[in-house]
Image 1 (spheres, rainbow, N blue to C red):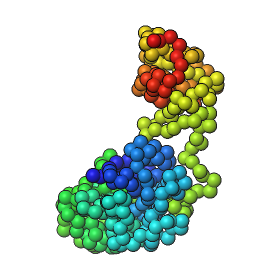
Image 2: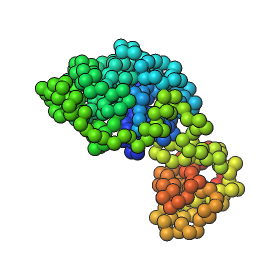
Image 3: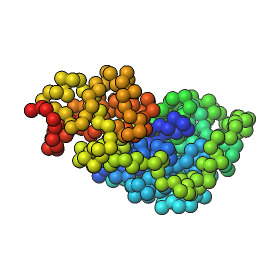
Image 4: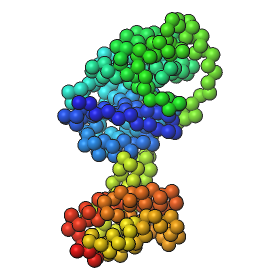
Length: 356
C-alpha cells in the first residue's frame, strides 16, 4: 500500500508530495518548501514515517526548497537532476534512474524545457507522475528564462509524459487556480498549449509571446536552490520556542507533554477551558489552573497576561487546541496545548485538585 499526501504552500502556490511505503514506513518528499519544513516534519512524525530522501523536480525560481533544512532535522538525503547545476546533493539523478522507498520506487524521466535540469518522477506502477513545472494542469511551465526552450519542452511532454498510460494521474508542482490533479488522457485531449493536434512550432510561438514578469523571489530563490536550500545562518524556519519542551503538530499547534509541564508551571498561565461542572467534576483540575470556558474566552482575553506564556487544557485536548488558535489570532505568541488534556494527565499519574 502507498501512503500519499498532497500538500500546498499558499504563498508560492507550490504542491509538495509525500509518498511512503506502508510496510517499511520509508518515504520520499517531492518539491518541499522552506517555509513549510516544520509542517512537513510534523506530518512525517505523526504518520510514523522515515524520510529517506527529498526530490526536486527542478531548480525553483519562485520559492526556496527545504531539502537542506529537512536533512539537518531528519537525516534524509537530497536528490535532484545531475544536469541541475546545484551543489550539495547526495544523489544526482539521470534519465531512467530509480529511487526506492521500501518496496516502492519512482523512476526519473528527463523532461527539460522549463529548465535544463527538469525531471518528472513516475511511480513504479505508472499510476502517478509528478511533473514539476514541465506539464501543468491545462498548461505548461514557462520557457523564457533559466535555460528555457519551448521546442525542448514540447518534445519532453510528447515523448516522456504523453506516452504514459492515459489513466496515469499527473501531479504538477504548481497550480494557481486551486486545481489539484489531472491525467495523461485529459491533457492529451484538452491542454490548450500541448494537446490535440498542436504542433511544435505552434507551441513555440505561443510560449515566445507570453510576456510574463519574472518570479518575485527569483533573486533569492535561485542562489539558495543551487545550494539545495542552504542559506547562511538559517537553521530553522522560525525560532523554535525556548520557554518549554514543545512539539509541533501537523495541525499547526505547539503541544506540551504532561511530563514537561512541571518544569514551566511556575512561569506560565494555565487556562482550563472546560465548563465549570467539569472543572469541579470527577477529573478535577490542575493546581493553579484558571477556569475560563472556551465559550467565554474571547470576551475575557483582557484577563490574560500577554507577557507570560499560556498553556491551555481541557478534557482530551480538543477544545484547548481551539483555544490555542483563538489566542494566536488575538496576538498571543507563546501559547501551547497540554497534550491529551486531563485524561492523559490522569493516566500519567499526576496530581489534581478536587475530583475523585
